[in-house]
Amino acid sequence: MKIKQWFSNVGKKIKWFFNEMMKIYSNEPSYFSKKRIESGIAFIIGQFGMVYYLVTHTMDSQDLGIWAGIEFLIAGYTVRQIQKEKKTNTPTDSGDDPTLLND
Image 1 (cartoon, rainbow, N blue to C red):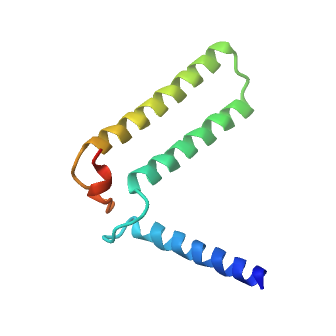
Image 2 (cartoon, one colour):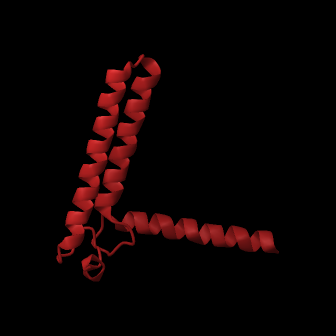
């Protein structure tokens, strides 16, 4: 009985997740932020590219320093953009709740 209930709960959560993901690009309000999803996907693609480069090429200390610098630059830019968006009082086009943007 507990296994059926567990599968039922997991099924409901998966259905909710995909429904909320589909709402990102619609006019309906979504639990997730479109900008954060897109920046997360871009970050993962960038990480994959850097790891692929690391695996296929040898790196000396200068290359490693440049790589780390680029990583920190991208991370800093992303955090700065998110913080700047939090300070605005206007809702974004992804259906974010404007009350969540106020500090």
